[in-house]
Image (cartoon, rainbow, N blue to C red; front, side, top):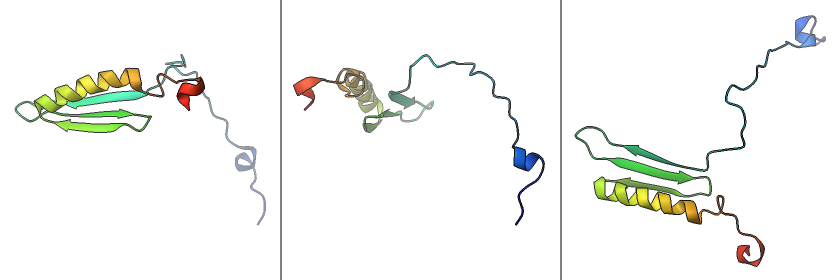
Length: 88
């Protein structure tokens, strides 16, 4: 086999514009997805990159999961890293 000639050998130039959203250092850690179809049973899912993955079906359980998801913000090891002996 011979080496490619022309553009294939030289590569193709691409125009990479700047990211319109920028990188302000923020990233998604946890998210809550709630679905409430008209006339149907509501569902919700709470996920976090720490490994948390919970779901709920029904109004009362969805409301409880919303409260639990909110409380997880204070206890998540990724949002609140502990240092020193407490981490061990």
